[in-house]
Length: 105
Image 1 (cartoon, helix red, strand yellow):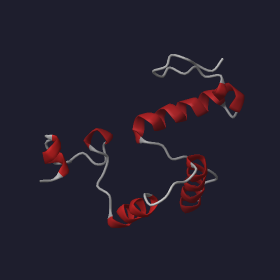
Image 2 (cartoon, helix red, strand yellow):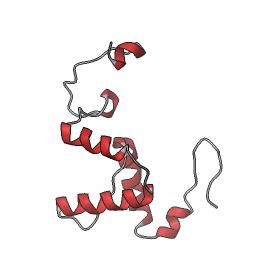
Image 3 (tube, helix red, strand yellow):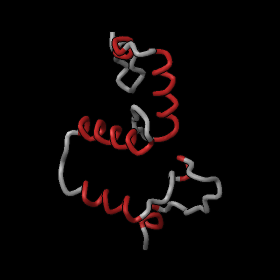
Image 4 (cartoon, helix red, strand yellow):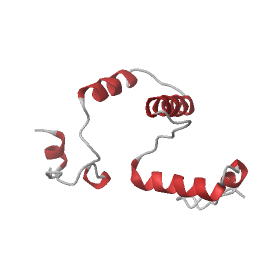
């Protein structure tokens, strides 16, 4: 029995491309291998985020890149970047509307 069957989740045919609500996308073998290797040890996530951004920027011939999870977070970050216009201090003052209800002041 496979994982979705054990969880009682029905599988679907994804005919709409890489949509987050349909599980994103199937992962090719090199991605699965990289995930297996990464799962063997710990790392500083800030360092990993920076290194991945640098690698993606290099591969796409851009001056910078930032990886995020899903389209909604990408839209949020792009909107925040437009609002901040390079003012990093304004990003730190952005209210946190998370579950804790606390925010940067």
